[in-house]
Image (cartoon, rainbow, N blue to C red; front, side):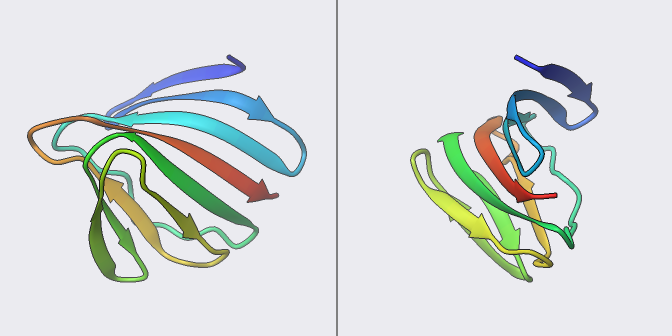
Amino acid sequence: MLEFSERPWGTYQVLHSTAISQVKEITVKAGARLSYQTHQKRAEHWFITQGPATVTIDGVTKTLQTGESVDIGIGVAHRLAAPESNSVTFIEVQTGT
């Protein structure tokens, strides 16, 4: 593990990092959510390892179950939320700078 951080919404740990990619394991507490954001220089791939998760991408919201994934392109608005009943854990693969 390269880095571990606790946040109000949960935790993350950096598992791998290079100049052009990074892999994190992120856990979002039950009832919490990440901010709705965009990245101008990186894309992301999310793989749900403990769900379900509510994912909003470019204003479209859907539920992802354990084992499902989603790709988020550069400049695309996105957010992940955990339902009140359970936390969500996912692997995030970032590519870009």
